[in-house]
Length: 95
Image (cartoon, rainbow, N blue to C red; front, side, top):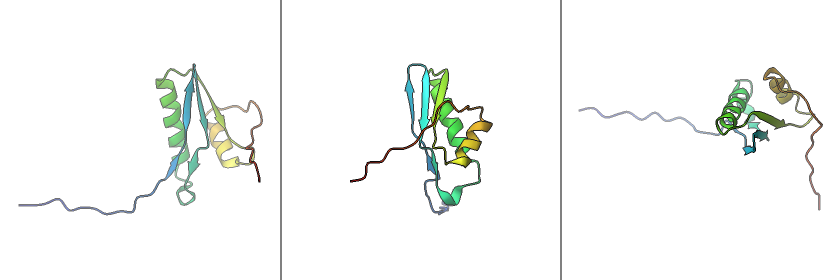
């Protein structure tokens, strides 16, 4: 009789990103990749998965919100055919 041998590996979140579907548009913002996992196309995979989800939900167009300073993300989105429409920045209220 044999038993399966478990394989143990550390589990951590590689990245995440929220998406919304409104009317016929998918909206993506705040896509984040864990810094040690940068450079392995995870951002591209997450973005493509979110865009696919939006398309499956009925979206015909999409928008991405990304800050001007995030050059890595902006370069990735350009390779996916995303065009800049307007500037975007976060607003933070300081007490």
